[in-house]
Length: 292
Image (cartoon, rainbow, N blue to C red; front, top):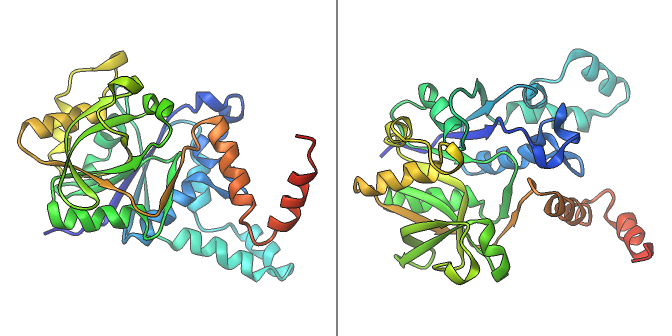
């Protein structure tokens, strides 16, 4: 059984919901206090045993590569002269967390396309996929929980999160489930963004995947789906038709942060600021003084 050692992080989107901010700055680089969103994603992957991080980019995404690169000589000298060795050590650690590989997205628009673009790097082995503009904070890490479940059941493994607010069900793909064990469910089908009355459960399946290499021919042979796009869920459904089991790993002790949405992004920044060791006290005082 092959070890899951590679993750593909699609990061080629336009970030239209955050324009004009994202005209030149990738949405994946929006800061959560003092770290960009995509760094939280990479840290989760590394904490789960991932060694190779494949980031699929597009135009105007150079800032992502620069962020995970070795700090330049001028910055290094500035930090040394300022006796800010702790910051220098942190920056060096960012660049050494994993093997970073960058590839440009090619092909028809859709969330399945960046995964197909990574095929030459992945080859014939199972791998993980995580989006670059959202993350789940969990203990143990979400992807680690998924890998443990995949080691037991194989097939396709999808991250699952319970949506407690019924009106929010229409934001996600909701799974029709058959329970396998306490936190793993076999997926019968996924209903994309259903009306609350049509949702087959309250388990949203999104955010992270473990996929077999058979996903590549499935993606390559897909006809454009909704809005003329290439959808990953359509390729997963094709694998299911071929007899490959598809599971949802219900994430325990985790919280989902959708930082691709303006309101949810701001909520995330505030929540993390209230936990930040350098500013949490003063920031809490500031919030209490606001005339809300």
